[in-house]
Amino acid sequence: MTDFAAPVSPDSFRKPTADEVAAAGNRTIPDLVGPDLRILFSGINPSLYSAATGHHFARPGNRFWPTLHGAGFTDRLLHPSEQHLLPALGLGITNVVARATARADELTPDELVTGGAILAERAGRLRPRFLAVLGVTAYRAAFGRPKARIGRQADTVGGVPVWVLPNPSGLNAHFQLPDLVREFTVLRAAAA
Image 1 (tube, rainbow, N blue to C red):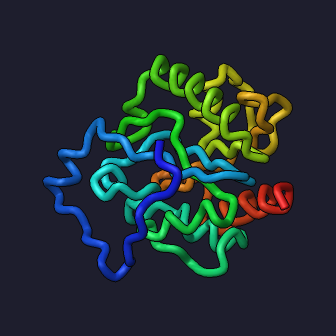
Image 2 (image 1 turned 90 degrees about the vertical axis):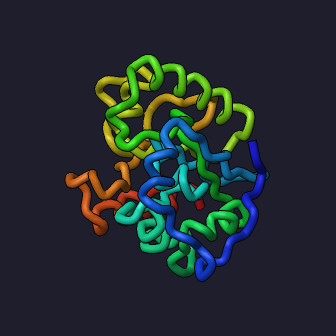
């Protein structure tokens, strides 16, 4: 696990080629963590685009970075290549399942359950104020909570309070950017 990713200027960010993206299947991206995290955001798993770039939530159309800014977590819109700035803000990023796929629905139920156990161990070790799982369907599958809803959960993961947020992927048509910002803002206020 890496504590801080090396800085990369957004101006020097090179978009991966289609072949590089296609070849990124099953790759992993190091966790982005630091001391005294307020929130550890957990995606479902990296996209092929993210795995090809080495940056979390890098796929064009993913709304994680605009949502963070809109909800007041950052004072400006960050580029995925600036992810190294998050730990200083008390924010970290990990995934339920480490391996990259084209779509989250390519993950097996067993992978999600195993990933949930690994995430629980990680959360217990890092002790963020909140673990924010980005995707209610993945949360339900990974932690055996079939009736879970968006928002703060009654249970904990690894002894850490859990907040389930909508998946910011552009493929999630149920939540548009204003909806995502509203949900992330409630978490930001709770973690202040």
